[in-house]
Length: 119
Image (cartoon, rainbow, N blue to C red; front, side):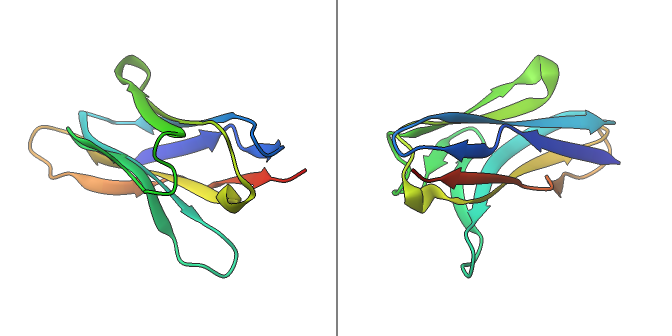
């Protein structure tokens, strides 16, 4: 089994920055895609950023958020700058992981971390 543990959320003032981390543990052979999603109260979960060879961002975060990865640590990051109140949501990481060369890739989700942007 693969576990994803997120961290880095919290309360920040508008214009501030946060860096979210998503550490994967367990039997991991390879990761071929990663992503961050968010869900605000009363809204559906939406894509924030994905990277699977090419990187894509939601229009609302382009130029402010950056997705990155540390392969040695099996950790994915989301650097969030110039935060706005509308960025307030629970943020979830998603990794597509293969546990061995002869198994298919599966999607795994983190437990979510709360980000609140407020003065």
